Length: 387
Image (tube, rainbow, N blue to C red; front, side, top):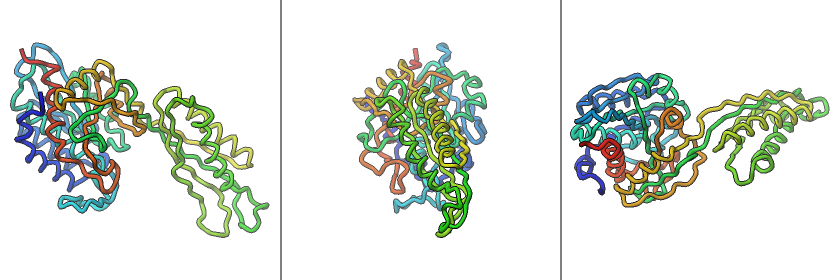
């Protein structure tokens, strides 16, 4: 079964939805316009139920099949939020909101799931219930966690859940997936090193936190190079080094370091948290300073379930003729929270040879729309076949 003909017919309409969303990006939970448009369209499609305000600004639509004998309920999830990036595409439909941009393709994900919802509401050629989920705040806000904590799975009796992300570098309309750990856990840390400031010409009268902080930055690199198993995946990156003084002739009173940790196993996650605290406090003490460490666990590892991954790949091959093995990704994805609550799978759909995600020149490729819509629709129709 190649791409469904209905989505070729709908592509112009779905593209218009996507480009409107691209023009009006909204960040984190502030997706009020986007959520309103999604809810309006779901009601116009004839969904059996449309509920707003799940996970603050999330939207859920329910589509019942022609039959309900199977009792099966499948969730399909798309993310809606944009990024705080100044767009540099030069497109006619470029962002009209300065400093905000759909630089990760969530506009495309939302539009494709709306297209699938329209088709499923028209045809209802399945035995069970499809629940379409439009999530805010994937880009660091934990909207997936918020929707789960709002009772998403239990309220609608969701038994399995599936998600999708476009992927530059994968051939247009092709798919890639892998079972097990797929996207990394994403944690953050902040370290404040306090010494005794003073005149830069009299360093002996100070306790220099800048030197201590520089030593700590270097020492933190030993977590990956000397503490973790060399064949495991772990990233420890210090991304901000900020002193309490900007003067040329002042040794500051304090320095604040910030950074991120990416891991693909609970063991490495624990290791990183423990060693960051030990290295920072130990190094600070050795250099007569004091370190206060704050470590925050953010998104967990996103783990695809084996059975659902096999099924998702089978559907992808039916739609596009092939499904490649995806690489491990050290970026985070808060669909992880949903996969912790229910079995399911997350797949990549090719965006072709485009700028990478999170880049000011990135743009979702509208030619991927028929393949993405077809995959979501086929997930429902094949998992809950009509008699």
